[in-house]
Amino acid sequence: MAEQILYPAAGSKEEIYISILPQIKALVEDESDLIANLGNITAVLKEAFNHLWIGFYLVKSENELVLGPFQGSLACTRIRKGRGVCGTAWETAATQVVADVNAIPNHICCDARSRSEIVVPLVCDNKVWGVLDIDSDELGSFDNIDREYLERLCNEIISCKEYK
Image (cartoon, rainbow, N blue to C red; front, side):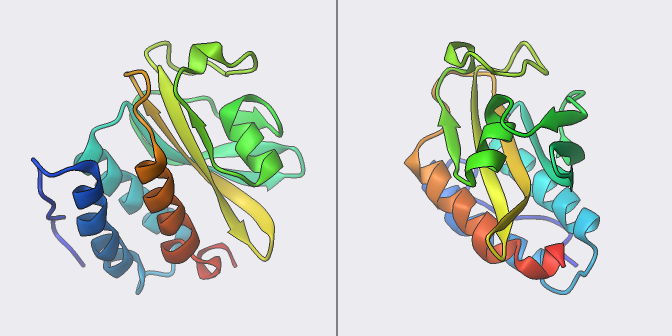
């Protein structure tokens, strides 16, 4: 088990992702407990990027996501399919990058400090089983670099074995 994650603190966003993704993979590959793995992933991402909120929502019924492991302030516990950025990512099975959450008519405000957001669906056998949600207190925090590496994290490291 890793006791610390090493990354270039003064590095670019991409350099940090390149550094932490293999470490996350090593951290979770021999652990079979989904909640433990998701918890450690949120801790690594929070430490590396210090975004306002980082967490997972898991599909618990046909129409509802339920809060899973997270790092940050209190969060919305349940999100309906199609509502807000998380519900939209679930419904469309596509990553959502929102530069200004206040410009989204159906945004769910769990923390008024949130200004921008990225949500990446977790997919197994063409079925979304959860989402990774990251909020920032700055406008326009997320870009194609975040999309690329977080999708890699969600598609390659958080594999179907986690879900099944």
